[in-house]
Structures are given as structure tokens and as C-alpha cells.
Image (tube, rainbow, N blue to C red; front, side):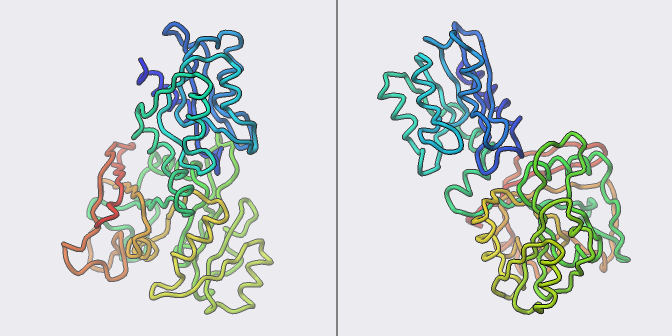
Length: 364
């Protein structure tokens, strides 16, 4: 019964995906005599937390009830009052929590407050599933860095474009719609200067049902080759350009005049120091970053060991050709023993394509 209700809380939490950052997504369920009497979820930043929403919906049925939460209730004043106090005042007698909140201002305080008030608290029910649901929040709150997902589209033989540069469209409409949902779930989308110049992408969420704030669009351009006439400067969403002192002041001023925030980072052998860039994004409360660029930027992020998750859409096509670019550029890895190891978490059909999701082993 506890797992069933926590699983429902996790399902409810997903309704806030892409809408609550930098807060986590959270769901809650109130149960009386084995029956669900109310549900809640954190719908958007600044709005009521899941626990408060569920308790309010339950009304006077909360006394003696069990409250199921996908994350430890907060015990501090932030954008909203502490949930622990609302839980105590509601008369709930038992609280079941999927995982603790690693935020230093919570991190066990919520559980202690509830137990001190005489409430029976159970922890760790479907903890792994809960941690994965809030993986971007957990990484950002514990490291200060965004969770990085590398998204690529390729043929079955790993080619992302033809030898002539043609790349539209490798995958089908269903995969492209899935990418729009991925964009809607993150705080920022990143491409390199090569992709920006060659494809002139808007990097916006093209989903009519999307109601959240637009993700920040980020272009990595070490030398200043990206013109301010590209569509990322169209004003439809915030835009950042990450560059180095190799770009001219004139170019940087033009980017700023076009509405971009310009971040000047140090240089390394890959161009813009991606470590510095991620640190800068983390300070701006960007928790989740979707890297959508071509093989060069993908190779840079993989080579710098900065990717947390890989999502690869594979089309039922064979392209071949020594000149056709593959998924990863740069020099790659000289030996098979140096290859980046992945833990495949999901494989699914998306229309005619295959989507593979995998996490990067950090010890590889």
C-alpha cells in the first residue's frame, strides 16, 4: 500500500515538470482507511507546495490520516510557508516519504520536526525512483552545477549528417515531438557555434500545450563567429552567449545589443572552458541543461566528463561514408579501454525510431 501511494505521488509530481525550477517537483497523497481522499502537486514556482495543496483539498478529513510525499516536507520559510507546520496542524498521524531533501536548509529537519510533534514518519519508500525524478535538483543543490543531458539524433550506423552536410530530418516526427517535450522540461538548451551558424535554430519549445517559461538558449562561441542576426536573438526566449577573450569587444557588444547575456569564460584546448560555463550557469539557478549541438560540442562535453545522461534517437537508416560526421567529433578515445561507459536505463520505440537513454558512469 505504501509503495502504491508513493508511486502515485511520483506521478503527480511529474505534472510540475519544467514549471517549478529551481524548486524540485513534488507530489502528495492523503489517505484515510486505505482510500485516497485528496492529491496535490507543486504546480509552479511560487505556488503552493504539494503537501499544502493535498491537505487543503482533504479539508477536515486529515485528522488521523496518512500523508504520502515524494520528497521530505520543507521546514523553512521560502517562497511559501513551511509544509511541516501545515502537516502538524492538520492532525495527520503518519507521513510516508520517498526521499529526504538534500537542500541544506531542509536535509532531515522536516522529518525531525514531524517526529518531535508525535507523527510517525516512514522514509525511503521508492527512494531510487524519487531521486531519479529530481535528479537535476539533487545535482544542483549538492554541487552547484546543472544536470547535463546530451541529446543526439543519428542513423543506425551513428551518422548525424551526410557527407554533404545534410541533416534535416534524420529522425521522424514522433522523435522531434519528443525532443520538444525534453526542451520543455529543462532550464536551458545549448548548442555550439557550428550548429548555430549552419542550422540557425530557434531553440524554443514548439509545443502548443506548453505553458511554462521558455528555456534559456545558450550558444557556445569561443571566437565570435556567430552573427547577431540568427534566430536565437529573436527575443522569443532568453539567450546567452558563452565566449572567451578571443572574441572582439565589438562582437560582444552586438550580442548584448541583440538582447543576449554574454558570459566571458576562460579558454582550454576545447575553446570555451565548459567547467567555467557550467559553474556560471549553476550560479544563475540553471539546474538542467540540454546539450543539442553537433558532434563537436558533444565531443567536447563528453571529453570533459561533464555529461550526466545521454539520450540518443536512432533512425532506421544506414548512411555510411568516411566523410559523414559521427555522433562524437574531436579525437575520441584511442583505446576501447578508455571508452565512456554508460548504464542504459531505457530503450523505447518512438514512431519509427528508437530512443536510448543512458547514464554516464562517473568512474569510467
